[in-house]
Amino acid sequence: MKRTGGALIVEALKANGVERVSCVPGESYLAVLDALKDSGIETLVCRQEGGAAMMADAWGRLTGKPGICMVTRGPGATNASAGLHVARQDSIPMILFIGQIGRDMKEREAFQEVEYRRAFTEFAKWVGEIDDARRIPEFVTRAFAVATSGRPGPVVLTLPEDMLLDEVDAPDAKPYTPVESHPGPSQIAALGAMLKTAKRPMVVLGGTRWSETSVAGIQAFAEKFKLPVGCSFRRQMLFDHLHPSYAGDVGIGINPALAREVKETDLLILLGGRFSEMPSSSYTLMDIPYPAQKLVHIHPDPSELGRVYRADLAICAAPEEFVSALATLEAQDAPAWAERTETMHAAYLAWSTPPKTSPGPVQMGEIMEWIEANTPKDAIFTNGAGNYATWLHRFHRFQAFNTQAAPTSGSMGYGLPAAVAAKQLFPEREVVCFAGDGCFMMHGQEFATAMRYNLPIITLVINNGIYGTIRMHQEREYPGRVSATDLTNPDFAALAKAYGGHGETVEKTEDFAPAFLRARASGKPAIIEIKLDPEAITPTRTLTQIRNKA
Image (tube, rainbow, N blue to C red; front, side, top):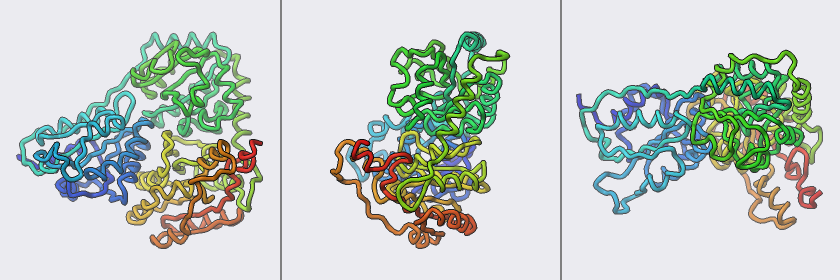
């Protein structure tokens, strides 16, 4: 039976288990939109392609399966590149479909023409164009395989408009075959031998391809061996922060005591992550290419092993398979490092206790304490980038897997689209987005998407009237010479109401709790604007102190 290219795309998505796509519609792929109408695949229509791509990233981040995004050519595709970059740096499986100009118009600089192989190679694991509709099952199956294998990441497939209208005979699409990598018995035995001779070992968790099972498994392993465990930047949901083995996050603003422990460990086990610039504190925690610490590096992609750090033991394996193999190791009865692990956990608890005073009538430390006491353990927290995120990053104690969606790439504007995606995926769970005033305005229009699909997220807009992170660096490098970092903002509570949602304004600490409870009770998408004194630039330092280098 002959089918159009548009129908074949949708059939291939269904064969690979796709349940939802995000998109901004375009005339270049109308045939796909038509095929989606009766497909049973849920289509979330977004307000800007960057937000749509970030939603797809969040689905991939929270499920481990490729998030699907569809956009039109030219400006649609280039807008989406913001989310594509997040997925690439964060190792998130995602497939971006781009409507393309007709095949007979190429190389003329036709309307909105872009050659995506040249434009997007740095953003994606693979960029392909489907010129023949008969090859759609082949290309789509390959896209899923590439996006999920080794180090996961985004794939771009472009769809010439006329190809989607072709009626062709093509095979029925079949689902991709997942590729798994396992540690060898000799490698596990070698790790066991290294643990037996270690005096100050430590584990740092990161990367993707984790599951609830593997997270529980690594926690059991740490408990059995009494090992201290840290989580790399914005991968904090990989370990229960109240577990006695948890030592803290290894990333921006690391606890100095923890940084010393990483440097002084005699056996560092990196599991799942790359230990890139942010987790390594700008590559200062380990020497390159030969770390002073004995290093065991476990990663599912062989190209990442030895790329930056030369490991004493390099194991090509995904977290699930590696953690499963650890069950064969026998622990010492009284490891020499047990007391050190207790000390490191106590240091983490002290470091993650919010300060009681900061400039201005709003005390974010008290607000964080209230949030900790009044949100469910399985609540999902999302954020973008900015100094405001420090309050969540440092003082929220993650206790469960799949409760965090935040960009390790440091992309502003990520939090709100991610919250929309998370609530659509887990409607029964509370979803709280942290955003700065600058961050919110990057993709704040996706609040309309939350309204359209009745997704009652709660967004905390922490408004200090400046691009806070940039102002902090500016005051340090060019004291008193403010340039390009002041902002003029809307009334965010009124903006929420204009969309049809719930809006609150918090100008004093005591306003927050009742505002949050009203937002929750409203059953609507909500914005709570928190007016924070710009002097409260970090939890422990003011702008004046930074300016005066105090």
